[in-house]
Image (cartoon, rainbow, N blue to C red; front, side, top):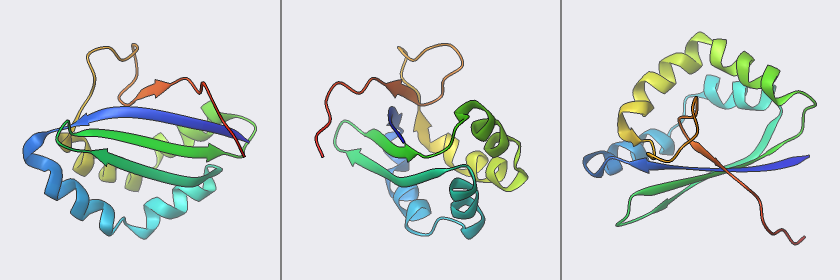
Length: 109
C-alpha cells in the first residue's frame, strides 16, 4: 500500500459549489476510484486560504496504469469537467500535474 497526498487551490467563488459537488459524488465516480485500487480517499479544505489537500491509499501494483484507466473513463472525464473549473492549480506544480503531488515525510500507525 502506498499513501499519496496532493494539494491544489480552490477558486474563492467556487467553495460552496465544490462542497456541494463532493457532498454527493456520483456513484460511477466512487466505483471507478475503487476499481483503480484507491481506498481511504479524503479531501480536506483549509479556509480562508482555499487550499484543498487530498489523501488516498493506493493498493494496486501499477499506479500509472490505474491512473490512465481512470483518465480514460468517460464518466470520470465528465466529473472532472464539472470540478476542474472550481480548482486553481499551484504555480509551483510539476509539469503535467493538476493537483501537486506531495512527499510523505512522516507516518505513524
